[in-house]
Amino acid sequence: MSKDKPKVATASLAGCFGCHMSLLDIDDRILKLIELVDFDKSPVDDIKEFTGRCAVGLIEGGCCNEENVRVLKDFRRHCDVLVSVGDCAINGGIPALRNGIPLKECMDEAYLNGPTVHNPSGQVPNDREIPLVLDKVYPCHEVVKIDYHLPGCPPSADTLWAALVALLEGKPLELPYELIKYD
Amino acid sequence: MSGKITFTIDGKEIEARQGQTILEAAEDAGIYIPKLCQMKGLVPHGSCRVCTVMVNGRPQAACTQPATDGMVVENDTPELKGMRRDIIDMLFVEGNHFCMFCDKSGNCELQAIAYRLGICAPKFPYLFPNRDLDASHPDIFIDRNRCVLCGRCVEASRDIDGKCVFEFVGRGPHKKIAVNAEAKLVDTDIDITDKAVNVCPVGAIIKKRVGYAVPIGERLYDKEPIGSDVENNKK
Image (cartoon, rainbow over all chains, first blue to last red; front, side, top):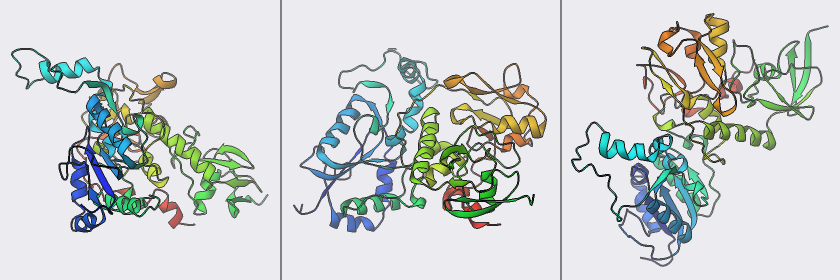
């Protein structure tokens, strides 16, 4: 890795990886991206821990468990600019549909009462290795300070590209009308 | 009296007919004032306050305030945009607006105003309220998660359909749209052809079995901002 290039880190919290797929959807521009930046902690290169300070952190997904919160805070500590990517990061998205339902009811439905559940032991998973589930799904900006938001489910490849180029060139991120979409 | 009056919006001179509201006169002059509860054909009642403009330095709802000779109206200012943004932000966080699976997405006026104001995320915390659905009717369903209490369906049902199917009940955060039946929408005399079914600015009253007839990306506000029709069709 070159030492001159700025680093970009990405993470998927409570999301579906669709926003990461959209990032790959920038097509051949990904070759240009690799010339512009080095990827640090990210599922793209499978680096698990930060190797240094990053210019930009892209966060997909909201916080539904304590591990999500830990990862998000870790990103905030390591990234100069932190960006919420997609509706799950911005408003909880589909996972936040559980926010109106008490957590116990959600767990019971998932592991005991659901029509397709086969669970003879009748146990709800409670191993200490499993991250503690939060009472509800939180958008990222309600957990740490977020600098920019890229809405969309997922944001289009053009949106991600426009945002990355602007941020890496140190320009203010102002999305044109066509690139602000919530669907 | 000639019946003609003149006033200014953001310094531009506008001619209006006696009895016109600021909003009507502005739209005739090709000036878009964002609005949510107001709709042509319904009596304006100034409930959403998105169309708030400064009239001689005081905030007024443009949809209910009559235009008067010589008034000075401000519309496109950073302060008013900020106020409108706050209202739209609050409408988003006070309901459960999941645009990603809403069939109204792209045709939704709330979403379109947010797009036009450049909102990427609301600044207030989400409330995630508990609201109920009513899918009992064979042709129509109500999703109260998306209701912004604009009252268009109440008015359209009462004044145009002559049925009074909808009405508000409750106060404050408990206020919601109710139907004039013992239990469900299916028990009312609402019909798919009623005006009330076609006036919802958001996805709270939706017709069944027509979803995604127009794909996402080709819908009303996907390419052009809301208000473009007003700005392009100067009378």
